[in-house]
Length: 273
Image 1 (cartoon, one colour):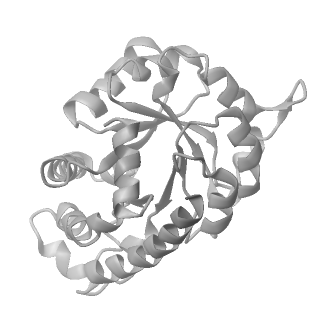
Image 2 (cartoon, rainbow, N blue to C red):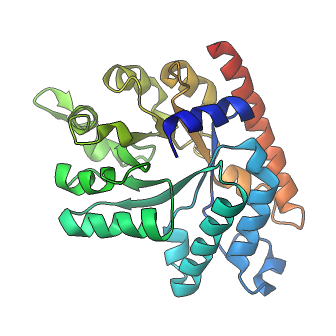
Image 3 (tube, rainbow, N blue to C red):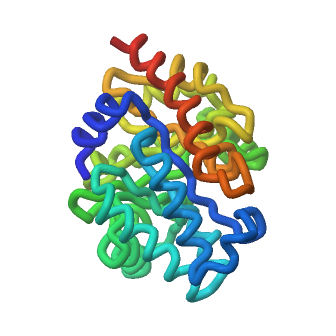
């Protein structure tokens, strides 16, 4: 999917919401456990109820790998269902991979060619030769971890090396990589005030922003500091939407929760104009 098409969808739906499909069998409604594939049954219901309110879905692959082959099959069915029924949706494999050379190429093939995701999250710690193999895939996007929303982000990401925070070096250096136009970045909503400086370094890149909702990030602040003329934001919410209810009305409750965020996003888009 091209960035231009993603921007079109944002304006069409008046939303830049990404819904995280972090599906946990301990949290889904108990009656779904009797389904042949409970994970896919849950995902399908969430997708059908919310697809008109969001522009992206982000399955965190750990929640599928934890269940072995059955979990991986549920992930495969989920992405196939999305691509077949809602091809306008931007899909993100939240896999946080990071290795060099042929290993990165194999990871990329797994998510881009076999599963046919539009993008994948990547850890940048191993540098250029761990990222460029992902960037080489035409029409696909690599979402680099830059400044994350977790408490441990301060262990390394904000530490200064020769007077510059490490996350800033990640942003600057990655822009020199081959096919850097295919880069997006993860920036946590709990670090919203950092976005002004981040936008100076990557003014045109899309930012995937987790941490709004359950982690306490402010949508208004993220938009204030991080939005550009192309919107340039994908705001992720996972638990606050998909687990809005654990009853039989879980999908409807998820849609209601997503709608509340979409209404806020519509207001922010109006301010952009």
